[in-house]
Image 1: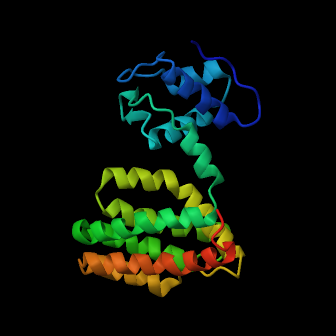
Image 2 (image 1 turned 90 degrees about the horizontal axis):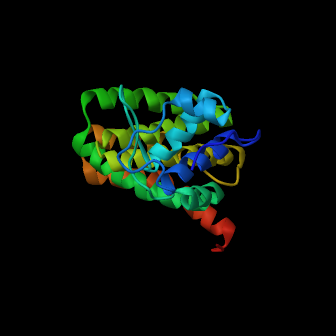
Image 3 (image 1 turned 180 degrees about the vertical axis):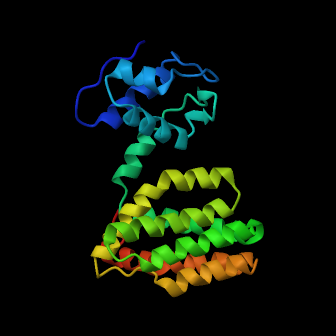
Length: 228
């Protein structure tokens, strides 16, 4: 099974489909290095950034593994496309329910494992979040802070899961900033998370992280009336 040029339109999605098809069909077995980005771009008739984005998406869900200075290898033959479609269609409530689980555990672990460098970086990320006013910039800054907490957890699975999920969190926070009926936790609650992490108090950090998400989730639950 070979690659073929993709049509114009949803280029990254089309590239991802073809890369996954190669893996699922066994054309690229687990443990094998796939062709270089430039070669893939030439075969598919797309730009190198489109190939890189598709590889990044498949890396986030564990299909591929990028080894710096060596290339990209097949890590799993599992097909993540059903998961990708589900995440793409997820409601804001779905996103915040998952965020609650991720954030609580990330904060708990970060309080145990954070370094001085982590705390300095989180201070900068929190300041950027507090200063963001435009909805898209706010959504991006909020997502970066939450990812920063996960990165301080030193749990590679949790970090990769958050990296994969972060785009949907960005979109959801942007939507909430535009919708005045749905509250978002302000600077004080996010500061409480960072303070507990800095104090090395895992349970206080977990509790503070829950307090960031739960009020928004409660309003979303009320607005949707329990419907799925």
